[in-house]
Length: 147
Image (cartoon, rainbow, N blue to C red; front, side, top):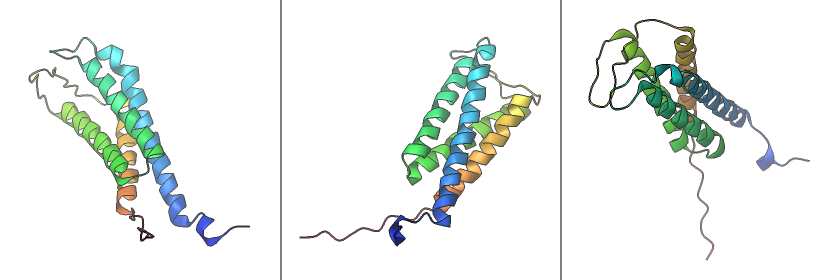
């Protein structure tokens, strides 16, 4: 026995799938960064590239949890920003020898590894799914207060 208010609509199913895809993309991003962090500890200025990878893994993990638990546009926006920022950094340091700046080490690495390719796909999937969540968000209708 179901009522009109308890049916799982196509829109709800698509948004649930988008939340899962967003979280999965961020989880892949977090896993790869955590896995590689030790290999990059030697690349260092004031902060090592390994520590930056650990920070990325932690932020991506947090964003994945937020997308699943706190179903608000802010969590989808955070997920999008984490993925976009990671993708931008990956592409810049793949193609441009930026050098060391302030506390950041020189992270130029002009090769495509399997981990980079997988990370790019995960970040693009995350951005697409989070974009869907942001563009299809409908604010909850406010009920008038009973006085």
